[in-house]
Image (cartoon, rainbow, N blue to C red; front, side, top):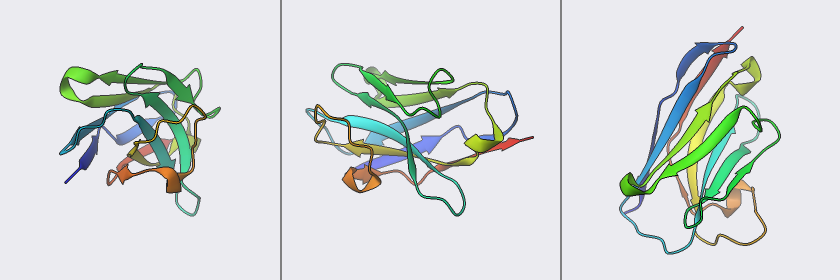
Length: 126
């Protein structure tokens, strides 16, 4: 079975940095994108960033653009999210997800994802 495991969450102060990791195991995909989503208490799950695995092309939500960097380490099937200049508004559970379709038009709806991790909590204090 396909398994996604996130790590790297924690408690940081405003302006601090964290690097999240996501390792995918149990499956091989010829064409797909990997995503980071986040969900704060009482809010809907929202898109953060994505990377097309075969090309390395990246996509960002406005909320993280210029502060977050998504990257891939193909040799270890690992995706990272480097988060800098963190704000209290970034507090959420961060989820790794996979979309196997990799359409030309980026779709950011959670319902379009094929696989999900269980999440890692990021808390940014004031």
